[in-house]
Image (cartoon, rainbow, N blue to C red; front, top):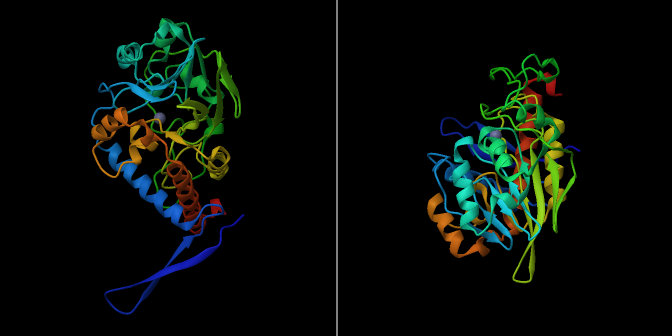
Length: 345
Ligand SMILES: [Zn+2]
């Protein structure tokens, strides 16, 4: 359904009396304009914090996020451990050369890598899946990933030689834009290939002992990035945790074969479906609800604060408002694209 377009204001040019009108999109209910505006600020803040990470591989101190959920990753933030007496789930595998850090972090939290029963990979890039082969070898865990990531994962982050890619060719770029990328945009292959034990499809449920995680696919950043929804208990309260993969800020819909109107709309519907989200975990610490729920501080200061006050993670506004902003941003971009390139009409 088309959004209602309304006039938001007028900017009077300093030279002459020409008036330039700006259009804006009203968010679809129940999102409000105020929420979308807040979401826009959150997105900007997240990018600003992300820019402070100079080396994604740097070590990071592990800590308990909430209940049986722990952060055990590196400086960029990915890798979480959800524990149970019947075995654990590891989310993400980080880089091939940060495996020792991950294992040390798991041990520092009082757990053993050999008790990990499932390694859930959100997409095939090196920062998320580079260590999967070795972590699987060391733990004996089953590796699971979105179905369309598997050809990449099982070939170290690239498609096998000779794969016909004609079907992946995206639409022509808008005039004046760069040619689109075929394959995994922003990818980083070159890691040991890992055999995937279970292909995941939208809505699949993963169980390890009492642990239950629902997988959702959101194509865009790669063929089938997978997001995870689950509940943790802490102090008698339950918290809905959502780990989303992955935000994209495309200049146009033709940036990759996986970013098109249908995939973006599928992702936006996913956001509405999983709300409310109490604890939002990005693939990186720069996007955690706990990080963004602080008025100031460097990424290191924000992460340090979370170790002493994990309740900062709990904020239902952050992911909701971010989602509202993304919907508005997308509709605005679509109007511009349709005006500039007939392929999108
Ligand atoms: Zn990636």
